[in-house]
Length: 190
Image (tube, rainbow, N blue to C red):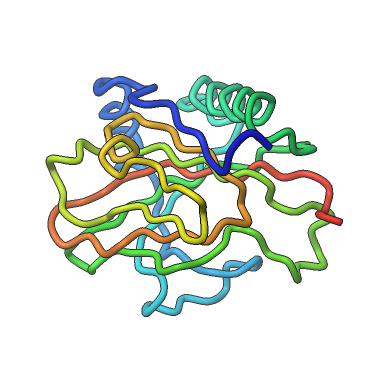
């Protein structure tokens, strides 16, 4: 492994990000849940709304393919994990109106016996201009060096990191933060 994370600064441009948000505002949202079965709501840990983007969604197939390509590229150059599938992407909204946040957590479900794979890589695309919201900072824990908060908060920046790293999204105190999140899966860790 070359490093604990990598990012592609402003990879998607402002227009691309705003078009994604505009299209996703028409999506069917659900209250974000936690756990492998997405059954827990635990508002003290996570407060956000989500919608899903599948590989076959005609409005987003090129976006899905680009995120897939970028994650594989990051994996080849930085992590060298055995990857096999990128499930549907999650569009996430953190709104200050409901104090949106996601407390400290890992993206891997160690005890999930139903899935023959583990999440290996987490991918976060920041879609929102950081001047339009406050809070909503992405924080990593127990890493040698954290990525620059200003750089990874830039609109269109793509952050890729191992799903086993503890991280959080701090509470949004003003405005709305929108992201796309994906988790590349592979054979279970041994």
